[in-house]
Length: 320
Image (cartoon, rainbow, N blue to C red; front, side, top):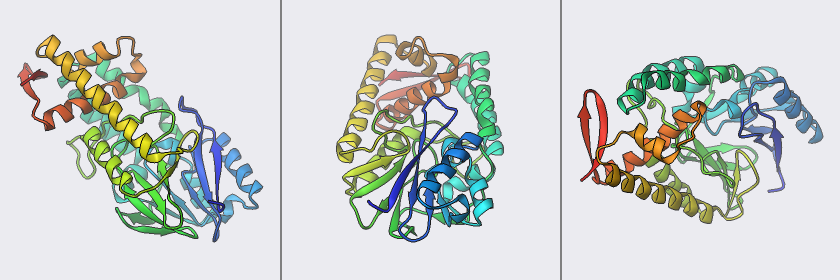
């Protein structure tokens, strides 16, 4: 697509740069402008200058999902330009109240992780460590909320494909004029995105079933018949259907690996399984690691392949 340009924005995170896409066919629209840092703002400004624009020219900012490396700087862009913010309805609350959302997650997941076998101090560390990263975002009020199948005009019509899993309120955008998809972090070329646990949209005391949601979303995106993907990080995805198939295969293989471990170890907690799968996992990765294991346990539960045993408020899993 000749009227779309990638600007690689630096982030303070291990994932590296985030891809911001500038649509210039009719005015200027941005997709995922990056985190709230001066380095990100400088790189965004320079990239827009190369295209003959400034931040003040931005008419709208589209957000694929409410993670700070993608949306953190959007409020600053909107304030400077007077443009509008576009996101899925399920992302509106985390975008508008990111710190409150983080507090809700901490309150929910402290006891939840312990119920999954995580020692109390490890659980506390897992939910507290992300506090260091909450400075890289500013609250963002969404002006236009989209649902699955809605269109957004960026010079061409982009159709929103609701794709929860990696995050609630995640959307991919598919233009009507080309067989491509802007996939955010839903599909990436170089890594398999982690379907992270979070508090379910519209609730205070329910969690997402992120991996089942994620696999369903992959099939929804596959049905859009896009050949090429433009992800939120890294290079473009040359064969999107093949990449989707690879990710699904990865998760199904991991599901079988976990089923086999349950069979070998007898009634076992999610934390025990995580330690078997990832024995050298640092404290910074405990929450993603638990999200990974619990997601596959959700799949096994949905398929009626495991039974759940409650022992002294700790949940254990055994094969049926």
